[in-house]
Structure formats: C-alpha cells, structure tokens
Amino acid sequence: MAYKINKPKRSFSDQAYFPEVAKGVALTARRFFKNTFSREENKVIATVQYPDEVRDYPERFRGVHRLTHRNDGSPRCVACLCCSTACPAQCIYIEPGEYEAGDARQGYERFPKVFLIDELRCIFCGFCVEACPCDAIRMDTGVHVPASTERDHFIFDKETLMSIPGKDGTYITGNPRPEPGDPGHPGITREQGH
Image (cartoon, rainbow, N blue to C red; front, side, top):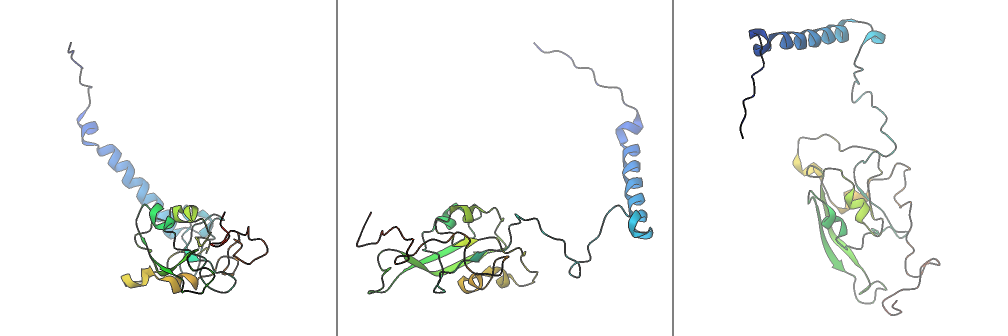
C-alpha cells in the first residue's frame, strides 16, 4: 500500500545552496591567504619543494620493481608466469626460454628471455611480489617512477629491472633460495626427483 511522504519545508536560500557555497569559498580564501602570506610556523599546509625537498617514504612503501640476482649475476626469475598471472593490471609480459643442452638447469627450470613491466599500467598492488615463488621480483627499492614525457621510458625491460638496487644497495634478495649444488639445496633435481 502506497503512502504519501511530506516534502520538507526549505527556504529559497536552502534550495539554492548559497550559504554553503559562500562558506566553502570563504574557507578556501582563508586557507589560501594564510598559507601564502603568513610565516612558516603559522601555515596550515606544509608544501614540499620537490625535487629539492623529498619526503621520507614509509618503511613499507612499494617502490619501483626490481629483479633480484643469483650469486652468478643471472636473474633469479624462473619464468613461471605467476607474477603476470596474478597481476590485475596485466602490465607484466614474460617470454620464457629454455636453457641449452648440457646446462644443469636444462629441463629443470626456465629463464625469462623477455621480461617487461609497463609502469604506467601498474597499480603497485604488490600481488606480483606475493605470487613469486622464487622471490625474484621485489618492490623494495624505496623510489618512485621517475617523471618523463616519453611512454617508452616507463616500460622497464629485464636489463633495467636488474640494474635497480634495493634500499640496502644490493641486488640480491633478503630471502635466498638455495640453488642446485648449494649446501642448503634440498637435493631435488631433474635426475633426482622428489
């Protein structure tokens, strides 16, 4: 059953929103003059003169991606495609390659022939880091993407990603994975099996 709802009584000034618009303009003007013409200690908003001044990022800031290195300098990535699968923005492209015959890793693991990240499409969610089973991709650089006017400057290839150090200045991971032949390796290889 339908029933009637009474319309609230409002004056013309309430319906036109003039008082609220005037309050908003007054607040904006007050903040503008206070921040522009008063002394530093009286300012409401602290303006950072970037790039001369840079704010410290939080400890868990997700910076630009990097690929970690093995002890021999090769990328730790095994081209399992977990990061590109987990990426909601689909900004990671990996083309896997097989090791040559005679290499101890041939048939056991792959390597990325091509590894590209489009930093303009990336939403910096960190899913790629969480999905990587080898801890090969990290976002612990502590830097943001540098400014540029060229789109090509935001597409990072494998060499670029491997040239970026972590906050501590190293290129290795904080969670090392023992490689076949290392003392800590569990002994699972193609020949040995599980």
